[in-house]
Length: 224
Image 1 (cartoon, rainbow, N blue to C red):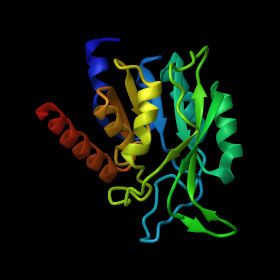
Image 2 (cartoon, rainbow, N blue to C red):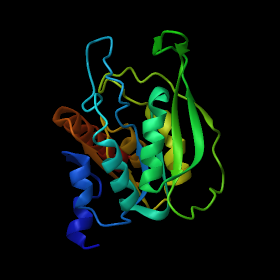
Image 3 (tube, rainbow, N blue to C red):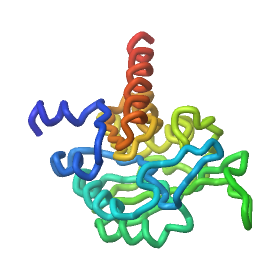
Image 4 (cartoon, rainbow, N blue to C red):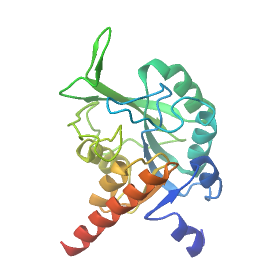
């Protein structure tokens, strides 16, 4: 990878369609993917906010095909998903070449909604590319997820719940990549742990928020 290409995809938020942006990346250029993509459920928060591309699945398979391509052999991807769209997500993961190797529940102290049951958790699959080695210290498959407040993004994940994922699955010298980075929580977790990071975001406002957030925490870390 040339220095120019490496610099364009390292410690930066790229605004645009992640499928197109990933096609410009070299194969096997990231160490860990941690992402919270649109759930394909037509999400609308209590305040009326929505999520781009949450009303169609046209991007799903192309995106995970590209994620598999840019992930290093033996690397891991952790993807959140909607339980009632698991058929679509699982088909896309397997078609891309990912192998499900773990399932993590993120336990919340509140209900995000209530219908037939009260929804008090989020869920994600751990996916492997190729012959992935077992982690030295496997993390629990239930992790507490404190409330983020959703101030910066309608489905904002708390950094605290993402830190153990980066620590376990991204090597100290590696790059954590999120092609649906929203307000940048996954990348802040990587930055806190001294990993390089790369984010992509379709929504211009969210991309700007993530850039400011990473710059702020980067300055604080440098000053510490």
